[in-house]
Image (cartoon, rainbow, N blue to C red; front, side, top):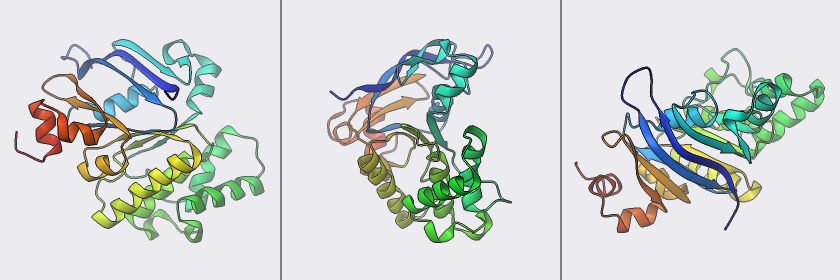
Length: 250
């Protein structure tokens, strides 16, 4: 079995004295796979992602990234660990006053000593990888939503992280653009060995790109399924899982 690059054990997140968003969440993500965190609105998908990248401190449980326990990594060691993760947020989160190339260069300026010429070369290469080589000089306001998502992925890849986290990459996209983004994710995963953790509730994308998945449920305050999404669609006997994969009313 391929090595696990992420381990989540008995994770729970709550805010203040409110009931937990989720609890008893445990799973592994293997090197080079496209792993999906799915579920309905409000189930805690994005909250789980934020916990996994160190933006939210869990109430209970452990997260291990690339062999290091996140809770034990502090100071420079924590920053070095988190630099090995790339993140793309829902809208792409590009800086509006910067060109696409300048956006991709931001992590390189922050975290490397590369000269300007080398940063520009890396930015061109990353934009070329996502099909935006001819759009490097454009501003975010001059491109489509799908292009902005691709540019966000290029920026997330700037430091060559072994793990990429994507938050709702297909949200708001038309079916053709969404399918193109799905293909890009699979091509990068297969071509570079990059591990993807993708938060989404878009069923078509889940089935197109997911090697494995977990499903969170708001009512259950946690996980209700884990496995190959195609097998879950065909074989799960859990009523909520069946309803999700078969697009049935609950």
